[in-house]
Image: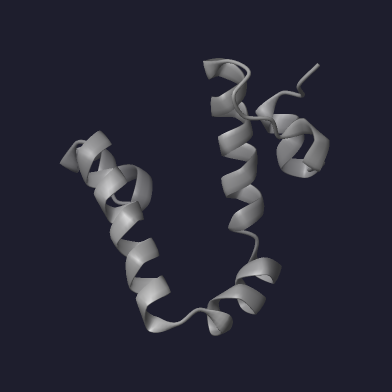
Length: 83
């Protein structure tokens, strides 16, 4: 059985990340995957190895997702940390 997302944040288990089973599992797995991806240790290694096009592409994709799915107020509060 899939762990709760809050449990996966502290105890990442690659076997708990599973896509294609159902929407709930996909959402929980994506949260776990993104949290693992955003770890400072990984980013310190990965980012210097990315070329400029990869950096731009990733930034464009993430910005587009937020622009599509967040209201301006949500963006400022949730992403920028502003009230």
